[in-house]
Length: 530
Ligand SMILES: [Zn+2]
Image (cartoon, rainbow, N blue to C red; front, side, top):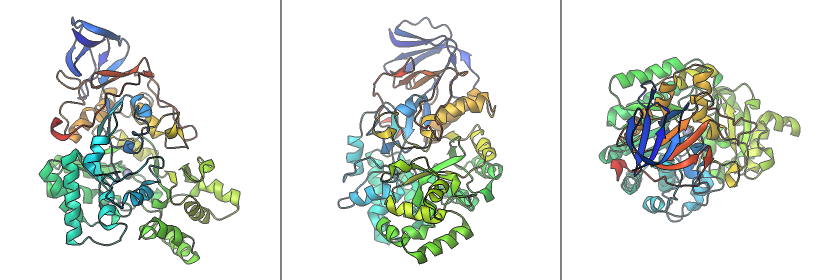
C-alpha cells in the first residue's frame, strides 16, 4: 500500500507540457505513479479536484541561510509551494568562518542577517550542524566570504599564496557538501577580484563538477559588460554559470531587457552552459551602504563609518553619484524611491523613504542617507525601486528564465517577522503563477511551472527533482490556479500567499489544507545524490 495518493487533480509535470488529468502516488518519499484514475491503494488520499498538481517549486536564488536556523519551518516560502531553496548567494555565506574572523563576518553580513548568531566554523561543521528544515536546501559557499577570510576588506589583487589558500577553502567546502560557489562582484570585497581570480576558482569548481552563480559586477550602466563577463566564465572553464536576479537598474538602462535576454539566449544556442533567474518585482533590496561607490568600503565597515562623517568625503561621494549614479543601481529619480526595509539600530524607521526622512529632519536627502548609515552602523537594509515594469515583465515572462526570490524565508510571527522586508520573501512564486499568468498573461501556467521546477532542476543539474515522474523525489505542490496569489505588499510585507493547499517535501506533507503541519522533512542536498 502506498503512503499517499493525490487524486483527481490536473498534473502539470514541470516539463512545460500541458496539464493532464492524473493521480499521483507517493511511497517512501518517492513518486511511484502518475496515471489517470489510478487503482493504487494508499493510506491517505488527498482530493485535488479543481486544482493543479505540480512539482514543488525551486527557489533557485535565496538568502535563507540567514533565517532557516531561526525559522526552520520556512513559512513564507513553503506556503507558496516552494520545496527547495538554493542559499549562500551573491558571494555571501556564513561559512567558513576561520578562527579570529567570525566577528568580521558578522559585521560584514549584519545588514543581511541581523539576527543570526555567528560562530567560528569550517564549512564541514556548518553542513553537519545545519538544522532540519521544512524545505530542501542546496548550499553554496560565497566568494566574498572566502575573500574576507583570505584578505579581509583589502582593495587589491590576491598574492599567489592567498589565491592558493582561497582555492583550498573552496575545495574544502565543495568536498563538505557545497553545491558550488557564488560571487557578489558588485560589492566589496568580491569587487576587488579580477576575472583571472574568478577563472582560477572556476577551475576548482570544474574539477569537482560544481557550479557557479554570480551577482554580476554591475546591474545598471554596465550590465551588458557584466553579462559578457559571466558568460565568459562558462565559456572558458565549462562550468555551469547561473546569472543571478537578471535586471536593468537605473532609469538610463530601462528598455534593455530584450537585448540582454538575447545575449544570454545566443550563448545558450552556442552550447554555453549558462542560465539566469529573476524575481517578478520592479524593486530590489540591498544593504544601504552598497549604493555608495565601492571605494567607500575600502578597509572595512569601521573605516567606512569614520569616512562618512567627513565633509570632504561626502562632497566626493556626492559628485561620484551625480556623475555615475548609484553603485549597481545607476541613476534614480530621487531618494523617494529608496525606503528602509530593516534598520536593526533604528527600527522605527522601517518603511520610510529617504525623501520622507530628509523632509522630517529638514536636511538634504544625501546627508540624511549618510547620517543614517552611521547611526545604524552600516547595518541598514533598503528597498530601491530601480527597474521598469516593462523589463521586469520581459525577463520574468521568458519561459527559460528560472525563478529566484533573492530573499529569506520569513514568518509573520517571531524574530524574522520584523521590519518591512521585500514582499518577494512571501510572494515571488505565487505572483508568477497567479497574477503573471492570469492577469498579465505573460506566459501559460505550464510555462510558469516549468520555469520554477523543471528548468530550475536542469540548471542545478538535479535529475530526480523538478518533474512529476515515477522515481523522482515526491516534492509536490497542489494549488488552485484561479486563486493562487501573493498578498505581501511593500507596506504590509508580512502576509502569506494564498491558494496553495498541499505541499509535500520528500514525500511528507508540510502544508495540509493550507496550514503548516510543523513537519521538517527537508535535507541538505549534495551533488551526486549522496
Ligand atoms: Zn544578489
